[in-house]
Image (cartoon, rainbow, N blue to C red; front, side, top):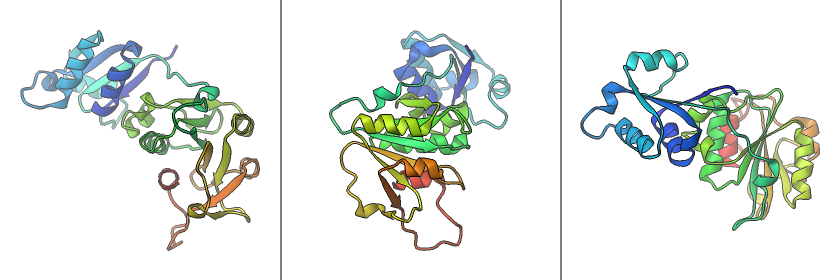
Length: 240
């Protein structure tokens, strides 16, 4: 098992609140954990100790060395085991609301992945699907960019995206690719209520043709200007 680092006040706070047993040890900057006033690191440390997490106070410079170069750890770094991916079936299980699954076709940038996961969680998606190959996985950068949402929403990692879409269809979900296809319509004109898998393409490349052809519907996000080509993948996902 490979250790994973989760850093930043928001992500570590969510990890402590929802999966404290996954934390091997939490390192906190002594200068901030023992500060008086309203330093948020104090609350994270108190919450971790209350949940039985091992907390070690270290000088801030040691956390700088522990976290990735240039990382904004904000005085807290948690060491956990491997990220636990969800089963695809769990993302479309019957619940109080219709399943909404966000399927990502080959995002390479962990910051974009984190931003999409954050939007998916905040807008009520039931899960996110990413491919195993030619795409970023859930990294410390993705977790930080998600503000901890990677710890709150199910994320499935699949070997074959087209096969995963067929599986979602078999579970009763419609599939809609945000992609420029001849039959694509402005997204606001489509009735996307009910069980849905929303497919977002990679940075620059978009949804691959084979993946797009396997979808039931194709949607466009109208733009007032086209001088910069297209929307950032995470922005497109949030708008959609």
